[in-house]
Image (cartoon, rainbow, N blue to C red; front, side, top):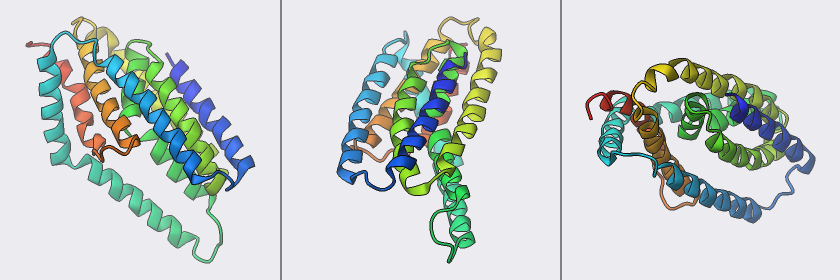
Length: 232
């Protein structure tokens, strides 16, 4: 059940070690090209996952209603304000102190690696179906990102691996506990996977620079098939 989480944790540790060794010598053009290539791979994973549903109406209603819930709750806005507040505190705390602090590297990397639709969808798939593909894809993205972050933010980036282990592992464990309930309706988990895969496509488009979707505001859509599959 936790294979995907453990691979993701290991990928961040390995990437951080490489980043610490490389320092700031990685050219921006190389990083951009590699990240866009990974964006294409993420797109293929999303397309594959969204083909497993049997009722397109469930996905449509879930995404539409989930977007409304997410916008009304302003999930993306709350997340950004939280991150900006932490960033301000960290900058204030190290005024005149030179380079990035251990806390700054840890907080920045933890927010990037642990908060978002891919983390939630991947961990849910891990716990509900034992499908690790999403977290394996995320691990590749995080591996590259951790190299970049660690080269500029230092050792704190490696410590964020602990946050990945706790958050992703926690979601996967909770999902495995409710899996028997969800699997009483055979369509529930596949339809949740379809909706989650649609969000993954949104993430891939953001990585490719095609869109700037607030994917976090769509996250409630992942859970709506649990209700809709009871009636449709």
